[in-house]
Length: 114
Length: 112
Image (cartoon, rainbow over all chains, first blue to last red; front, side):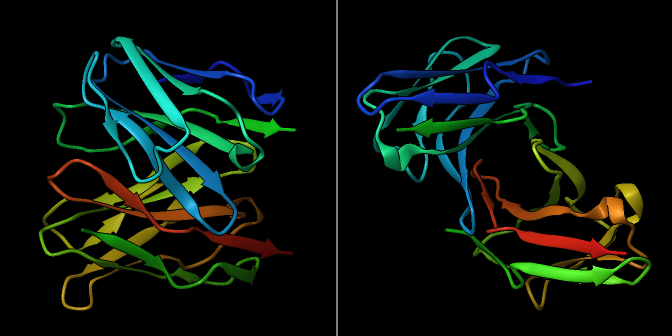
């Protein structure tokens, strides 16, 4: 089974802190994604990566950056956390060669910025 | 650009009743369509998908969906729901360009 793990289920940080959210997948997937999920707004794409060291902005990249140094790991960085970044963050991966196009999601990290 | 509209934000239904969760999309090119389910405190998992072929797609847990190209819809149905189907459901569309777009979600609440 595909497994996508996220470093923390719950995280509380203070305004202005630098925050790292880590995501690891074990299926050798090329594509990885970071979303944030807010009530009534569904999933919004922050950044995605098609391969190692490649990244592209999604729909709401402001205030975030990402890093993909190894194929299995995709990190989301909040350079200076703000209260409006309090949210659920979901990581996902997808094969770049399979025609199924299914995304596999991690359990999510609920981040609270105080 | 593509977009997805889930027409109902909340759907309450009694156990063993049928349910339909509605999804419309817009895209200028061919699309692939998905329904995902998110149980409380969990990530999303795939219920079913339409890539090509038969427009009636069957998924896990007794759910099915029908792709209607002329109405640009992909509604999710189940003939008889269980308490355990209580969850949030997301419709998603993907084109060959790569990104997927998700709807805002529909919360299905099954009452005894």
